[in-house]
Length: 561
Image (cartoon, rainbow, N blue to C red; front, side, top):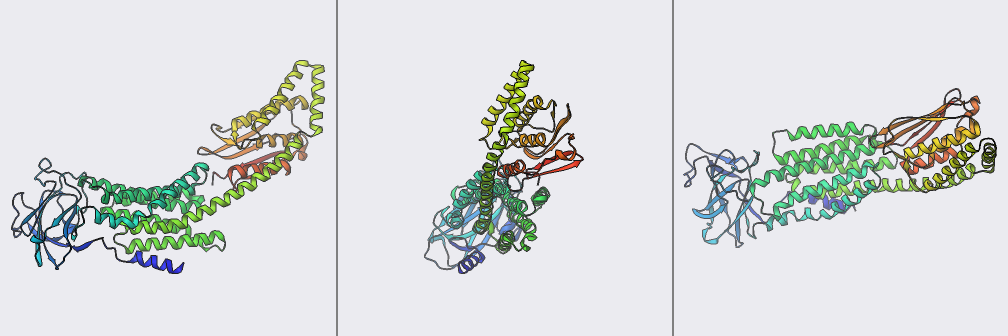
C-alpha cells in the first residue's frame, strides 16, 4: 500500500507533459497594424512579447515567431489554441485560416478555439522556421486575461486526438464520481438530516460537471466565443468542489457553527471571483480556499485519541496532499485535480459510509428497543384495571346520562381505531398526534370529571413525529397526577427550517403536589427509543419539575444542532 501511494505521488508530482508535444512557442514579435498583407515586423508599433501576453481583443494583431526545428521523420502540425479567428503562414506559405480575422465584428468569422494545420515536409526547413499569424477576437463574450493560450508544433494526428490523450487519465475518474453522486444523493434523499451525504453528492456532481467542461475541448471543436463560458463553468464547478469540501468538514467536526463556516467560505470564494487574475488561477484559488477551510475545521478533531480523531487525521493528511499538489502542478486543473480528488474522495467516501453504517446500526437498535417498549406500553395501557375503570365509568354514564354514555363509547372506539391505524407507521403528522391527545383528554374527562385542554404554541404545518409519543406523555401525566377542571397542558413547538427541532410539553399544576411527576419508566424509555429511531442518536428526551407540581418534558430531535 505504501509503495502504491509513493508511485501515485511521484506520478502526480511529475511535470505535466501534453500528449504529442514537440515544441512550445514562447516568444513572438507582435504588431498592431491594419489588416492586409503581413507587415515587415520592424514598424514602430511592433514589439517583442510572449504568447500569453498576446491580446487581440482591442483589434486585429499580427505575430511572428522564429521556430527552430530538429530533423524529424514524424508528421508535424501547428496548433494554435486561442480565443481568436486566425490566418497562418509558415515560411511564407499560407497554411490556411481558422474562421476569418477582420477589422471589426462584421468582417470577422469566428473560428474554433483549437486550430491545427498539418506541416508538409516540403515547407519545413532544418533549423529556423518562420511563423506568421493574423488574429482578431471581435466575438469574445467578455474580456479575458489571456486570449491566446498555446502555440506549439506537435506530432500531427488530427485536431482532437492529442487533447483526448491528454485528458484520458482524468476521464478514468468519471465513473467514480458518477457512482458517488448517485449513491450519496440517494442516501441524502433517504435521510435529509444527514448533510454529510449531501455535501459528498454535491462534491461528486460538481467534479463530474467540471471534468465534462474540461474534456469538452478534446471532444468538440468549440467555436472560440464558447471558451469564455467554458472557463466560467469550470470556475463555478471548482467553487462547488471547494465549498463541498468545506461543508463536509464543518458538518462533521464543527456542526455547532456550520452556518458561519459555510457563509465565510462563500464570501471568500465570491471575493476570488472578483480578483483581476486569469480564469484558471481563480479556479485553483477557490479549490485552495475550500481545502484550507476544511483543514481548519478538521484540525481540532484530529487531536482526539479516538476513532473520530483517527478519521479526522486521515482527512487532514489527504487535504494537505491536495493543497500541495495544487501548488506544485501548473496544469493541475487539466488532469491532476481529478486523480487527486479521486484519492481524497476515497477517504471522504469511506468516512461517510462509516458514519452512515453507524447511524443504521443505532437506528436498528433503537427500533428494536422501541418495538419491545411499545409492546410493554400497550400491555400497560390495556391492563385490566384500565379497562375495568373505563367500563365502570361507562356503565355509570349509560345509567345516569345515556347520551353521554354513547359519546364516551364513540370516543373510546375512535381512540382504539386510531391507535391501531398509526401503530405501524414510523411517522405521523404532528397535527394528528395533537388531535389524538385532545380526544384522549375528552375521554378521560368522563372518568375524572376534569375537562382538560391542550394549548399549542408554534407552527405545526408539515411536521411529523413518531406516533404516540405525546399521547404517552399525556397518559403518564394523567396516571401520576390529578388536575383541576379547566386546566390545560401546554405544548411549545420550535422548528428547524422544514424539520421539527424541539417539542416542550408542560403539565398543569397537579393537585397531588409532588406525587404528580412524570416518572422515568416504560413511557419515557419508549419515547427515547422512538425519537432515536426516527431522528437519530442525537435526539434526546428530558423530564423534570419546573416549579412545585408542574412538570415539563423536552424532546430535542437534533435538527437544531
